[in-house]
Image (spheres, rainbow, N blue to C red):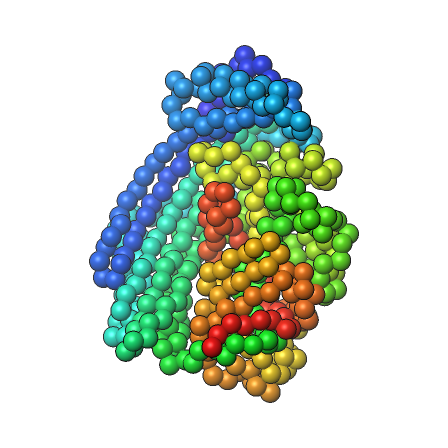
Length: 454
């Protein structure tokens, strides 16, 4: 394949050029209630070529080899047009030329599992909640995505890397009288089919929770000290803070860029946040980004102080900061953009029991349920929660929304647990989808959190 890519780029006239070719294979199985709605296996492939010339940068995607020459010429012409019509030429930080082939270690390769076996496993998980009369619907889907990437650039890099992701995820809906409640389910990872085997307990526990929600009371609105579980803490780290660690976001927001200056005190001194996509077996694991740069751990907040940022080669040059290997594309249809890999709040030294005693009175909130951010302000839903009285978990509550200001909330994180957990399923919709976006954290306490309810 690399010989073909070299021929495509042969004769190109530019300061820099790169090309990425991908073969993508996807398997999908879906149930809506007892009905099988999806059973498919698809394969596709395509190319992305990027050209940088005299400060102008352009990209073109194409799917047929006979379109290659026209695509390269179009990219050259667009880059030239851009260079003549911009007051701010594009620069790229210097990167090491790499030649490597990398494939992750898989406990069990899902590509070798028969479709019938996958179908029966998903059916079994789907039937667990449907055995309960109050469960009125399920939406459970299996997804398997394999990207085989070939990357070549004019600086001498030649990288072939495989990315494979499997998941079973969806929604369980229960109803009693006029009250309807639902809860999300999700298992998976990037280390093979074994990640989704033997997960009956997950579906049993989630079914019990959605049934319990039918008897729960709506939370009373107010300001609370709250324990957030690892799932909700991870979503806060990703959504409320993490996107502002992506350099291409803050570079166009002058006020935010000023606030997010390296060395700025942003949070409580006990707070540490890192993006580390180098951990094998985790959902967000990869070796090289889609610019051929090796990913590295980036300490984003250290002892409450902003200490790092996520970059592409372009933004690293713009900010004068080190490369991080965080320029990632959804697949061959897109040029890459700056993305988080595996972002999480790093663990502290408190047990969950110690957090309960420290909280004493407040709320214990679990699992994210949608949300949005607007600048430095955020609003998230929590799937469910519990009242905490005198250090003990009490009755279940539902219909929970939390909101706050990012900077104030970072200061209000008053205690950090020791029980780090990372997400098994991911997702981020910034510009493109990224099913491998991973987040997590330990249990944390946030003081003065605004909780919306009745």
